[in-house]
Structure formats: C-alpha cells, structure tokens
Image (tube, rainbow, N blue to C red):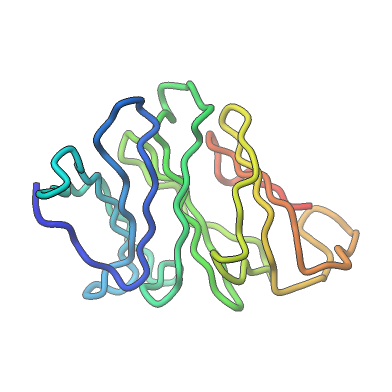
Length: 173
C-alpha cells in the first residue's frame, strides 16, 4: 500500500462489492509512456487513504496520458469472473480506445471503432445496465456509416453497447 498516485487525466469508479471502502483509480503514467495503471484506493479512513496497484497494461500505441478518461463498472454483473470488472474509456478527437479490466488482473486488449472517436467524457453517459451489459450515449466525431452497418447516423450522437464479459463484442448504433 502506498500514497495516492497522481495522473494528468485519471478516472474513478466504485467497487461493485456492497460495503467496500475501496474505489478504483485508473490513469496513464506521466513517466512511462503508454502504461495504464489501475489502483484500488481504500478510503475507509478518508484522512489517510491508501492505494494498492492492481494491474498495469503497457500499450504505447493506445494509452495516452494526455487523453481524458472515463471509468465505470457493470453493477448488474453477477458472474464471478467479471464481478468488479472496470471499464476504462479513453477519449480523443481522432481516436478513442477502451478496455475491460478484470478483478482477476487481466486487462483486455484496448480496442476502438475504426474512424469513430468519442469526443469528450463531458458528452459520454452511461444510461443503463443489464447484467454484464452497459449502455452509453455519446458524442462522436463522425456521421459516417458505423461499424457493422451500412446506415449513416445523420447525427454526431451514437448509442453504444458495452459488453462486460467480452469487450471485443461491443456494438454501436
């Protein structure tokens, strides 16, 4: 356990375990380019919180410390393999990547939608959950046809379905 680390663009999310005094803190290292770090932070004693490193993921092509982040979990997920799974979304004007971080310490390969970027965490909202699925409404950079469809959106706003059991199967409409 250690002091709370600092990041240029961090995000926080609650543990899904009821009564847990912990929260997740995720960010990309300001000293090691491309290294995502996820900590559990015990705030049971708010005057002296402690951080424990849970997992790191090094991917210099995907994770950027200059890019804003958004963290959320899948509160309806009761699968023991994904309980307390953390979803990390990174934003940018021309690229966006995301990954699920498992409570087992596994970080899924960061992925994104080709040619579509989520612009800002200020225009990104978790609007619902059903089991291991999260539903998002977000502002994008494009009205071009979306992945797996030939229909243009005619809007910069899009809906996204996040999959807590397999991040590679997220879809956008």
